[in-house]
Image (cartoon, rainbow over all chains, first blue to last red; front, side, top):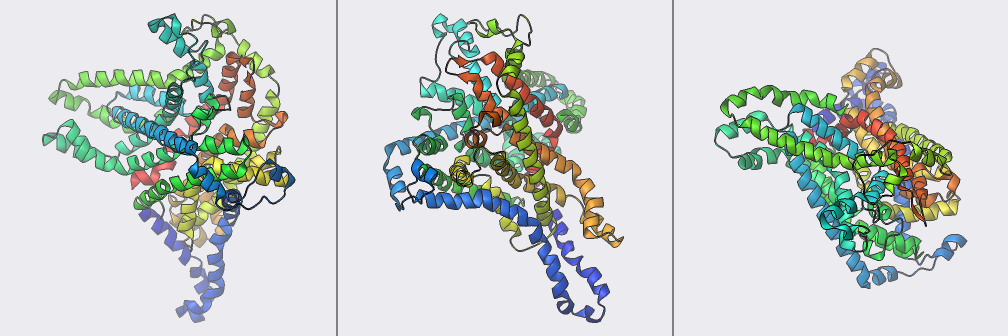
Length: 335
Length: 299
């Protein structure tokens, strides 16, 4: 990709000047003389092309982000929102209030734990399934791929509805099945009374939804592992784990690291799955950072606290994001 | 569809299978074991989707039963009839179509321009732009939601399609630019050059040479964007309060009332909403995996 790109990117700069030299033969030897007017036009073109994108991104990402920062230093409540009056400036009050609140730290801990469990499960199962895909008869692989894509293509809202239905306390299939083994008492069991059990269902939904992307991506990476290397290692007496560790893993590692980083960011920001499974109003025990910020903003109508929490989340995640970007640069994606 | 692209890859191990068998007779047995594990996994992964369809098609008395059976006793379309009769079904389809199609068409035009600039020109700030595009995708949606809500409120954009359209349009931009750029750099620049040597203008070269080659990539990116816009529910829920302007995903929430949830109708409605997505996914699946990971895999 890198090589192709540098090749692709260099010539166009030369193209506009080629016909130009023909048109103005006298100063052909000194392009700096004839260059400026035309070259300026050529140099301006890419900026004109990216201008709409930049305006759009500035309007919907950059401007709100700046506004968030400003709002987080103010005290914006419902009254200021509807009257349009400038909210009072409170400095770091929102931040000190949040950081001093023990509930906030509970929420941070819950978010990190939930993210860690989801990412570990997703990546472990994803890697095992991708390795499994390499060892299957063709038709079985097709069946598995179709199943993965079916799961992948479920809209979040639909997937959440299905899991809510499966875990329904009265007529849900999970309770029916468990009741068959554990006895009638289990019918009517409410999975969401105990947050640990509730998060179990939410984790199942998140992991189920995330696995297909991971498997498809890792499988694509695994097909890039040279077969000869694995065979040579096997002939030299390497065990299956040895082959994986010293031949397969080094090849797929960049992809694995990148998918893991993405999963960390996605699972840290999980919002919809919890929100939808808890019927649009999650109990405090179910709040992760995103939901905590949301409920502060829209339920307690302290928009400033909400944005301050969201910004703290951005800061917490920025380390992961920078790491991801560096990985991308290493593989030459950002060239 | 997915299978079509994977068959060439899968052809290699299958063709080699007889050879190692001579060396190791136990190969076949381990492969059988793997196949069984894979089929069980496939069943587990597909089960929620199966349950969605079965619940949508089974009679309501089976849904409201303490003894859920894996197979319906009879098939009925009553649930679908109830879902279609639910208030605002038609307006929800309308809203979803208006919002997602407008956003995707606008987004694709802007994204293609930017992708051409990034893929074909070397200019100051090019890398920075690409990094910004990748980074903004990682911002938590709630961080954007509150200020956008406040801003649209000040501009009178709440409860209006255009507010939602702008948000969707821009949120498709980052990945669309990155994805289309991936397709642009794979088109040899020589093609464009020779068209221009033969007398095409830059615009003509784009229209006659680049665009036809880019079309499949653009189609994949648009479908991906369309699916994203179609599936979005959070901004739609917060920015639109008018029942007659609900998008389909927000409309799904109306099946849950204080008296409980009509799961039969909810599953039927969900099936209808998911169906176009599944079809689109099958079409672009292979391209999407390639578009998302091309650099990483080739790197």
